[in-house]
Image (cartoon, rainbow over all chains, first blue to last red; front, side):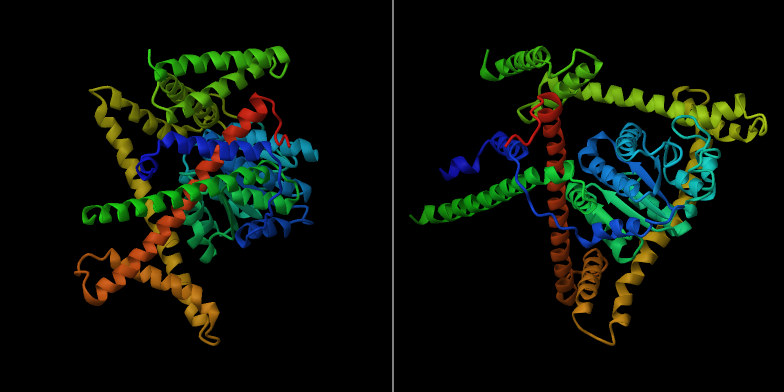
Length: 279
Length: 247
């Protein structure tokens, strides 16, 4: 029996994890979601801008379809929060794959709150360069992005007409899944132009950014689907991230179960091997 | 024919039957949108089929992905960067600005990189590489040293000077961070043999590293499960139209 458990087919583990994800998605049950201080800090920063008719937030969508399940709910929750408080939002991206996702997020949240493209929000699209583009945006935003994604001049759009540099944004949020991402926004943007910066990232990257919270280079951090769920709960509009917490929690329990089982079986096997020659 | 060779034809047949049913029932529309969902579902299942074993369906989906991404990126870079930043300023400039001849400099540097494909003009690409290396180093070194080293040193030390008046629990977290930083730095300091006091401190550094790896691995598991949730949700909701939760 112990030998069989030690050599368990990995496909059985995959199947167990698949059902652990599938079944909780099909069965509805509520889990308590409490916002952590790092997520609440991003929420509070945006909340502090409500009531300011000139407030503009910049969101850099630096993720692709491979990290869409984690970061797209985050983007939607932040956009809904901004639009519900009449805060204008400008979007850019440093990577090509994000263009379609960012447009989808703006259209979805914009329609829900009746926001107008070019006045209440704008998506300036993609430009090559990564870190150099950030520096360029800090020096001359209109030069870095002469047109938005539709081809409308940024110097003529009501929302971007008076924005000359990154310093003109009241808050900047980077939603990142790799390079270029949060590191580059800190080194080439926040450190140089000194604007308040928040970040949302995949769970894999989150531990790397905790030191920047302590040094206050980041004023808040939304990490992974759990962070997105916390933000959705704060905004009060529960979406994919909150419903994703059910399978996430059950899958984690299954994985912890497998880790415990593996260790128990390993130690049982080791003690059996040690007893073997003596017997 | 063994069981594993039968599995994939059966999978394709089952996929076709399910899609036929969904189209007949009206859950999926016979349109480009419906075709897109079927294609996305098929590619998702083909990629996950690798968990069973490597197979031609996985290979097909993998190569399709590489090809699509390359074409998508090329189109975006053309329309959003090359057209707007190079072609328009040179050939279709606004009347009040005029032709921006300076654009020729970065455009030529970019074109020089293409000479890597041709034997005789390959030396031109070295000019571009020299420029990129010089620019990259000049920009990156001061910015990264300032942001990731100098800015990090201050918060590692400063809480102690601030907490000296009321030395209590407030100093615990900074103390743990300081012990972690010092012990890990000593663990990676190989000029002294790790014995005695140095060995003891480096062992503490190993424990800190193990905790760090554990936290990273935990977050990695969370991230991978999140991606699986996204795909399973797509399959259940967009493809099969089960509209979860059912109960």
